[in-house]
Length: 489
Image (cartoon, rainbow, N blue to C red; front, side, top):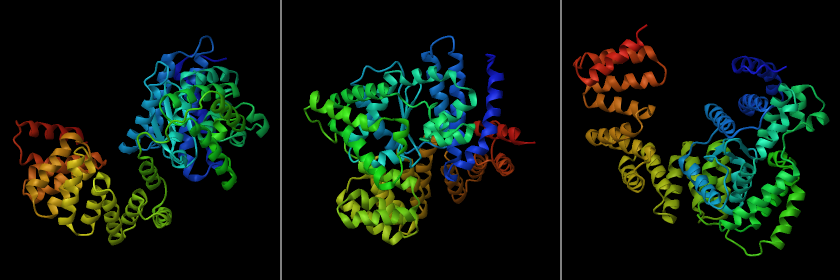
């Protein structure tokens, strides 16, 4: 019997999570352990709403609440890729697709998951997630737009809500394990290991989309994609390239596990192309996918792996700006600064107005001990993109290295006005004010910095030191006095 009491249910379900955590850890590759742990709790939160909906349909407000909860959990576990350029690019593609759809009543949100697994999934409330591994597998923008269109169609068709309502017949621990495995692309073996069921029995309990749901999402997504101006064949091409990936890697891409019936889908899409969508759209409308894929590789793989990859790509095409950029960033991270600067310059010759190349070349020059060169490139980068906090921070450091403290402090204050809690900026301001012989400001920013990184005793020392140089009635003096009171034991 289920007692609908939020607190009591949550306590019980977290106990279930604790009981199964060890099994999940054991059967999962170590680097994905924190992902499974997070997604197990996400699955448990899905249960709460599934059982609340026993007597009634899963409401829109419940979907929104649950979708936000899942997003917050993934965000807290640092599983979401936060690069502004990459997320803006995905948002731009998704917005074009959404404008062609009769959208569900949600504020859609699109995020990139930091995982090399080839997967994409939608959750309640209009949340869509694309794994890094899937984005890097796409050969053109239309293929990526096709995946987005398919996931949007699942949300617009309320397929997730249908599956959750069906799942209420499954017991709590089993459903939690299935949901955790499903979002990661796990299959019956994962569920069986966690729940004690046989693999065959566990596979029958999965929350995979049905064949009818997949065909409906393909049909709607296909319409969205073509109406947006993309080549509809890209959706079919992506599924075929996934099949090639499966053949060459001798493994099943997780996208196949959460989106089943791939062979039938290929035939179905082929028929749609022949009968309904004969006009060809474009493979690329915005451009820039190669740079996004480069950024994802730089985040997702160790520098040594990326070094050989980008070296090979740049040898194959020495005019490929993105390969040169990826190689230069990788070399900079490995301390190969001279080689990095040379490749940044080669990339800049091919793309002289690329603000990312200008910024990262300036940073490499600064690290190599060439502040005058760094100043030129960083100033150009900031002129092109004034809100680039990384470029601004290194411009301030460069000015400081050249002995221009007033200009450096001006730059740091610009950052502080926009990102007042950025750790590196707080430290830079504290150091610069110290060099400028302004002890009150130096101690104040050291106090904020050490408070930010959790060193309360050191923060208290600096706030108390700052008070010696401040008027007790001044706004800054009152603020610092408040910090001292809060930090004192």
